[in-house]
Length: 495
Image (cartoon, rainbow, N blue to C red):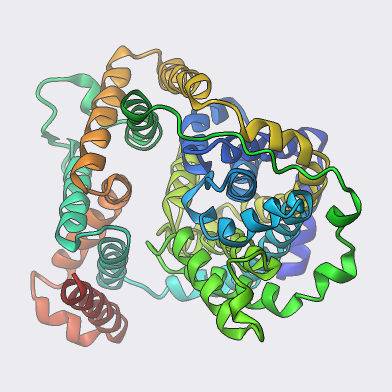
């Protein structure tokens, strides 16, 4: 069965009232959380994963992808209205979005952000359709040695680019991999570091680690900052009363098609490489748009191309980061890492065999992503006035309910107070890591990929009897090890 016919079958499975309803709910929820400064799609996905236990795999993953799409674009609203990015990747949107808002064109700026976000997202989803199967076919040629080299490359990129200090990034990854070894040995089933606790035989619970380390630690960090400095987000009366100057005609938007395509390509390229992140895509695209412009001096003063470049790039990451996730089981960023956890909860093991063993679910997911872009456009356009109001909500009223949702999400599936304790421990660890400059993202991804790295490394050592010179016999492993070493050396020299 070719890709087109599989995609049609996927649309048949995705075009159900329940699936579309949850996609719409996920996008709306994602936009609201993205609009609130300090939160974001990662926090939302981490908190909401437990709610998907009782959904079908297609509905669950489509719902979480909808949250990711909405959260990525929602961060532009407070950037434009308040000059306060809702998410880190939306920081570049404030450069030109806020000046437009000060001129009385806040509505037009938010329309530019929404339309370019949907356009970039759609282009990256099309790229996912074209490249996922070839990448998976190539990954089927990988043995344990090649997979170990790919993991080394991914961790090198992660440590070199997502942490201010390479050593701190590597240490966080090492701690995450070390924590992933807790539980029964996958080969001989001997207990490792369980300390007599039956609850640890299956290892540390992924949901408790993710919610505690990513969502709850972020909320606790923000609450301590609120206690120390107060809420610095103030309302700015920038909403325009003149509808004429906030009207955006389709022809006016598509006049910037070169910027849209270039930014989507940059975002897709960044999304396919593990560890680079959405923020890098946004700033790379903004810089590329400024260099390509005939009036670069207009950037930072209300040039709509600055908004288009940022939003098209950061939304393009949402689809493209699933290419390595589906093909080889390595997430492109932390949101994709959380989606891997959701896949595993529903019995779908990410990797090269995902398309052959669960092809119906994957193509239904891809179809849901394309449907979600249309839903995103409708909901985003209809709710521009609502998002403006949400952006001005005080964080002191928003953060406590997130804590309650996180605790409920960890407790309800297994009704385990032990897992709540694990979540709180990782929340405190996450806050300490944020204050000391260590990357909690590196730790969580190291924990998520640690068991896969251990499996491939031990198989490689058994197959080649501990002979490290076997690397020279595999061109693929040589390439990935060489690139990984180059990235680490370059990062060390820059730091």
